[in-house]
Length: 209
Length: 247
Image 1 (cartoon, chains in turn yellow, purple):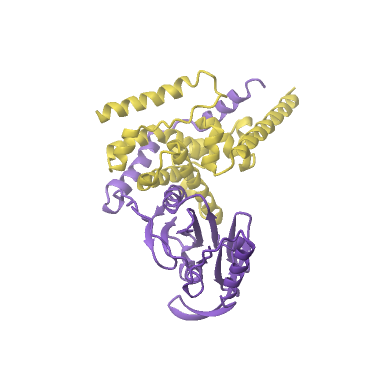
Image 2 (cartoon, each protein chain N blue to C red):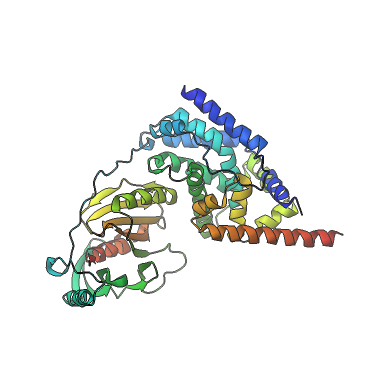
């Protein structure tokens, strides 16, 4: 029974991501969590299978988000790893008053920040270990497109809300919860960030002409 | 520009394209090892505290004050009551294994809601809009994580609800969060503890939730780093022993 529910949960998530929202990309998704209550309960009871199911469903977008925030595949891997471990260890403190996804991504984003702060302090540390990861360096060395570079060169104030919105389709309210900000602050940062991008793109296109 | 959102989304997704299966496996293997292959990683059930421990009103010489601060006579009485506290005294605290005699000074919290004695040689109380923060007198170098003790009152959130909210918050901010426990020292209430890492500069927090005896809670949040546990941590503990609610 559990496996059937888990499969339905996975299919639901897949179809949501595959076909998107009928109102289009820009419209925000509902705040209903993708996390199934039964799976949550199984995880609370220590089920490895349920946790693996949750991992399989969430890891892909978690890695995408962490990669985008940290701009470094190795940091992203560490952040995702730690975030999942923390979720498992602290699942008892999750309250359904908060969307599960917002809770999960709050942990993930905080973990990204923690790793970035730590690495900033140890900047002189040898980075050769990272370069030995074939599958990780491939993407790191890739030339970024102009639009992606623009986004990644924005101040974190704008960059992080934009990444959460466009990668995960989070609502302003959810982004506010994840980043522990006022919803209006998020709204204004998204608006200003988007305008900045628009202006830069226009300038780039004009120069191109 | 009509399709800016589509372009932004596509660009971001293209550049964070799906995880290679080897990476997915690597991450899972690490998680699996950490959580399911070692005894210490087993899920720890958070024991819910079933009742709120009532806290007695601590005032000078244990006198219970029931006057309202809203009336002139009430305010006058509160002032009179505060005058009963000595402005300065000496406490003995254990710092890194040594007994240390420290002079502490009386400080009145926001809206005369509480008093606390502060080691003013090392710390200062910074009153804020919503809360008061006790922090180091001299700013710490940038390499040190935050060292502070925030005192905040939530007039409409009872301790049990407050604890529940904070448990969620702490779990999202710290790698390890210990079970909430009722404590009688340094204050009477609930204690939560969080830590991220085991390095010298790993951030540490102790959060105390105290019944404000009026349907709300005081939340005291200590922040320091692992290496400072015996220093700032111990000094915060000693100062908190001198924390008294004034109702």
